[in-house]
Amino acid sequence: MFDVIIAGCGPTGAMLAAELRLHDVRVLVLEKETAPVSFVRIVGLHVRSIELMAMRGLLERILERGRQRPAGGFFAAINKPAPEGLDSAHAYLLGIPQPVIVQLLEEHAIELGAQVRRGCAVADFEQDDDGVTVELADGEQLRSRYLVGCDGGRSTVRKLLGVGFPGEPSRTETLMGEMEVGVPQEEIATKVTEIRETHQRFWLRPFGEGVYSVLVPAAGVSDRAQPPTLEDFRQQLRTIAGTDFGVHSPRWLSRFGDATRLAERYRVGRVLLAGDAAHIHPPIGGQGLNLGVQDAFNLGWKLAAQIRGWAPETLLDTYQAERHPVAEDVLDNTRAQMELSSTEPGPRAVRRLLTELMDFDEVNRHLIEKITAIGIRYDFGEGPDLLGRRLRDIDVKQGHLYDLLHRGRGLLLDRTERLTVGGWSDRVDHLADPTAVLDVPCVLLRPDGHVAWIGDDQQDLDDHLSRWFGKPAN
Ligand SMILES: Cc1cc2nc3c(=O)[nH]c(=O)nc-3n(C[C@H](O)[C@H](O)[C@H](O)COP(=O)(O)OP(=O)(O)OC[C@H]3O[C@@H](n4cnc5c(N)ncnc54)[C@H](O)[C@@H]3O)c2cc1C
Image 1 (cartoon, rainbow, N blue to C red):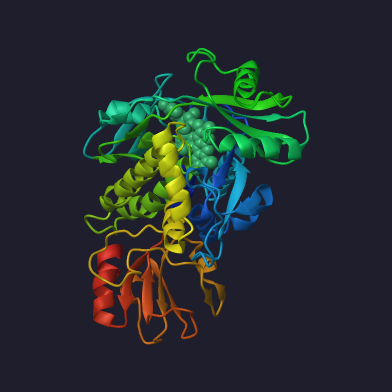
Image 2: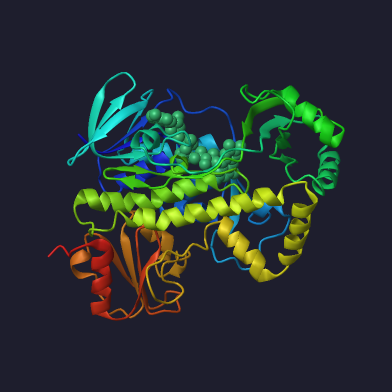
């Protein structure tokens, strides 16, 4: 008997397993592939995801394996630098191969005590009042208290659950791959700049050591049912650029569409959905993996609280209440970005206008805070603007605030030095620090770093500790 079975060891499943293990939850991750994915797709980790890594002590490990790039230029690939003074100690993008992220998160989960079984596909399940019986493709049955489907866009768990996945089917196909080129970088840069004046779904981006990420429309080449070939890329490059840049030695080649869909519900009884299993959208802006990892970060401590028995009655349902609107917003911004990438005169005019508007700091800031997910504000009710937002990594007397969050517990940051977490001290840490760089007296942080309370009154604090962390221990 496990507490939680997770279907799928992609970035979302691995992150969730680690988060649950911080609270001693017995976790089994079932992954249908026998070996980790070998193709190297370089993805962008945006600011909020980098912050999550810092909050769990993984920052150094992840920085070593990725390449830091400026945070700007991601909204519809409009070439504008990030505004000055972005509200984060980690205001950059980290380009990193997706398999490396998965490997790091999986290792972290295993170090914390999670079990990962590869070559095990979840084929069926049945839930009852006490738990879920999960059936594998080979007929083996396993039992757990909860099941979480982190099994990607074609999620078996979502389908078996009968949860609707409304949205739009794919209409526009794009080829994307990584390969080496046969001409000098300057020659490519000049040509790409010229072509991108009119073609937004076209790029050759250097990733170092002669490897380029190549993106071209799929229209007209290759059979949708077959994997794309290098020749498909060459043909499209020649059609659009008049040269195929001598591309060769592909690392991986893929085709993606712009299907955009969102699960109607994230939870049915003891079964939940997270990551691509709950939402799919085109990769423009590079948000899918980030969104999934952040789902896991939101869900982990809540599901752990439910299992440990201290969760307030509605806590687990706040997962959907908070994350569904975030996904809705990401889906919408990718729809907008796809429109802005069209070669039609109307969308091109809108793109030019938006490019001008992004010279206004507030517009640029709004868009980058969306893409990087640092602008998210959960609805915790009436209160100051900081309530419901995540707190940046500020300096505190022990060093960095995020270093105090590695164990995934709540934290009271108390500048008054007269408050206490009392009977919640088994779930919430207390840091009395009058020097903390905050313009409010005290904040209560949830384990995901979001501000759950602001104030200086003990009774009010106790009410909010109850709201988020359940009944006091004594
Ligand atoms: C071309 C391209 C570029 C992208 N670039 C970016 C980017 O720059 N930034 C970004 O944030 N996102 C990017 N994405 C999106 C990102 O790759 C996905 O959003 C991310 O992989 C979702 O993670 P996940 O763990 O939810 O699902 P997945 O990565 O799909 O993992 C699901 C796992 O579940 C397993 N599984 C499936 N079915 C079962 C089953 N029945 N039982 C057990 N296991 C099962 C699968 O084998 C897989 O390992 C890109 C996507 C594409 C296509």
